[in-house]
Amino acid sequence: MIYAQVMAGGIGSRMGHTERPKQFLNLADKPIIIHTLEKFSLIAEFDKIIVSIHPKWMQYAKDLIAKYIDDERFVVIEGGAERNDTVMGAINYIKSNFGLNEADVLVMHDAVRPFVSRRIIMDNIEAASHYKAVDTVIPATDTIVKSENGIISEIPVRDQMFQGQTPQTVNIQAFESQYNSMTIEERNILSDSAKVMLLAGYEVGVVNGDESNIKVTRPYDLRIANIIAQENLDVQ
Image (cartoon, rainbow, N blue to C red; front, side):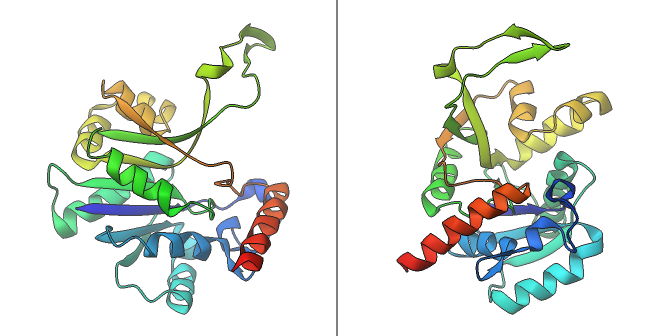
């Protein structure tokens, strides 16, 4: 089976003083998270779409989804303290309610990347049939500098550098097995799901992202996102 997980468990501290976490802030005509969830609701291949929310905002999220989206595949569950805890929460939900099969995959996406395209999502699903893990990336346009203690230690070749986006996709059984074998220290360090699978020795496939697939993290991002959203509305 193919599952989606939209991660919306953060409280958005980098957005500044807002009355709601950033995923619930309005973007053009509706909340950011609704823009994102609508993209996933259009993908018929998903058997279930899991929305992971901070415990304090679960009822708010349920009411919001009910207001905007009519899709029985959606379920709201609690997010975890860290990103991979949130992933495991979704996996445990799947395991408890549907069991796990060898070919089951989980497509994970940030709720605050509202401009993800159908093409990116479908490319993740297709690549998951060839790899145990898939990452969405775009080429780095700036030179990447590695620094330690305020001193440059390495300047990698830019043509080999990419910026990570989401979705990230994993084979559920493979991810669960690796995560359960990790130490607490490893879990704290390896917050990225693709890194977890790399540690296990799996090849991680790459899907081309898009520059418009931005993450709304800070007030500046929200201003840019509103421009993109308004342009999309004008085209419709």
